[in-house]
Length: 355
Image (cartoon, rainbow, N blue to C red; front, side, top):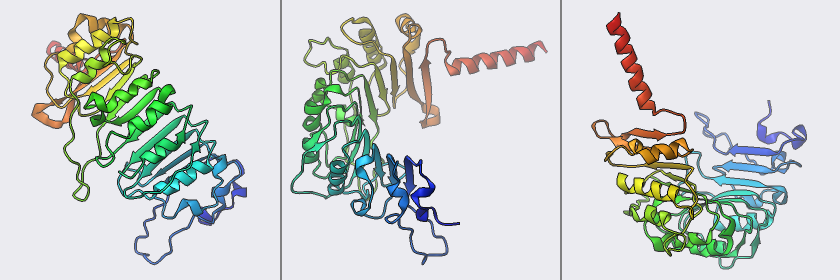
């Protein structure tokens, strides 16, 4: 059987999507040459539209890829998430974007210490989704050169080297249609850092993630958690200068939130009761503290859930360590899983007693 890399594209005339994990475990045969994709006819398939490439070893700008026909490009260094050994340099990304005017979705990881002197205008009239992992290189010129009038979904994951100052470069110019934004939670630690989102008047979804685990080679300095002010700003009236996203409907807060239960309750009530604000559809918050009180026993919250709000709040279980979580759930027509287990346990106990 021929290695896949040697198969001609004529054997796959309908090939539209190609995913390559360019990593090979050679085992005992350390001298076997690594497969090269550069001369494979797969990458020049006539109908190829999507490429996802992990751990590529060569400069893709030297490959005969038909960039002009691609609609989806994803270049990553690892299948396990971002790390600073990304293989795609900023100059390559600029080349790829310049040669790919039909892009609808792109996902790039930009490593450290790669500066280019000038940046051409990069017009991507159909781009709707962009994911950037910025390792701390001079990415500001890239964002300044982008013309992405149809951008809807933007994910931006900086390191402490790139920080929060990059967002105002892109969002005020091209963020008018953005409906979802994902980043590391510490971007929301200060209003001055995220107030540029106020230009994204259609923003409906915010996802706040945890930054990557620091290593001895790449330590992460202390980052600030996000206080109650963030939720209070979201619940303020549209005329309040602190309000930056009155259309928010979905919040997925995965880490770094120093929110109180009373503050969360206040936020939910304010969002669901103010006719000038969009009502919440989904709220998920993971906390690193014990529960103060059960929000789900509040009558108004129960009514909001019955009306359609999906609510989940995760708390650590102190006696089992912070790696385990106790969840409070709220979904229309659905019981809390822990309540279901308790009811089942009571039923089993009752049946055993009757027997």
